[in-house]
Length: 511
Image: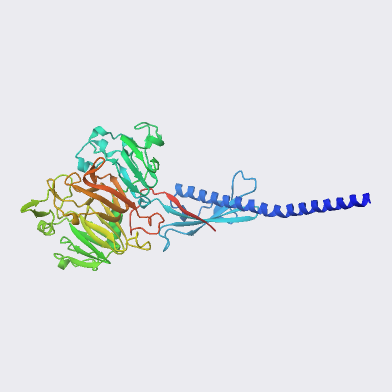
């Protein structure tokens, strides 16, 4: 009986042991497969990183038939040092020159480990001014407005500009709010509580003026005037984003696909149409843009995808400008005031290639000019993206020099009623040589907040107001990022890109 009982216990324990062993063996295969799957995904990511590094060295690599790169073959490239024989291969799914690509590049990378494959698909987008709500090359006024002849004023702070050069240093003041990602190639000055609601980057190299230099870190990425307080992001290092030296590419596109005008040109956007007054335009590049025979009158035409205003080389009639109210004359309380035309103000000379804009845009258009763009009234979208996220209305402003916010004064006397002031500009703005600036920002009474909804990139920083804890003259800033730009879903037609724009990851998805 004892022997039978012992044998029964032995058989029972053996059964449990065999069962445990069977379960363990059955679970080992899924665990191995799971490990291989994760390793294959990592190999696919390594493939995407490899492709991006090749794009960084050659921005047109997507057009390459590189016979030395085995990752472009079905065999794939072996990951160095991998004990599992991990490989990756990749292929271009959508090229940036294909219709509907929006200039984006789509690449699929497949990783393989022990016969297990996993794929990742990445969308790459070239560096863009539209990645930022605010961007400057230099955090100082243009020498055009300071009158300084010092060569230091054409430099960034970390390259030798200093406050004693009369360069018109501008700081972020109390209450300023930048509602989106921002970047400056310069070293920003912070003078109070500032809200960077998105990532803030600067291309500051330290130590200042020395060689060799290294990328800034921490407090070396910005300067402080008095005190600095950040409610969200602090500036950190970011690579240079270089502004083109001209907007001739836009001029060429407007000549072929859009509308070209000459001399001082006034445009009011009316949704899908625009009313154009351009007495200096004697020849139309396209018949649908303008009828030169009636150039002395305003004409309403269809909205064009690109508009460019060139200098007029022939004579023009200044009284045509005066008839449009430039410079402005206004009678207040029985006294007639004539607008000041010296100092921080645009020139109204009729032969200059300057665009005067206002109105509501229903469509996609970019406006450029040889000289300036003057925003004479609110510039908005017919379908406000904040209310209608599906809106495709978008406007680009790319003057050769400056975007002015119209603010005429006579001495220190305001010549606009409160209802005539510019309070909102919906646009992607890029100023090539100079700035985005308020006309006579240092004269008159406080104007409230200036909302710029879109993005702003400028060579020199322009001033929109003065004051400390409160605004004394001009505007306070309310810059809001158009998030449609971040996804690359939309951009103004023919909007310019940075010099040597590098490709960047926009998104990565499975499969």
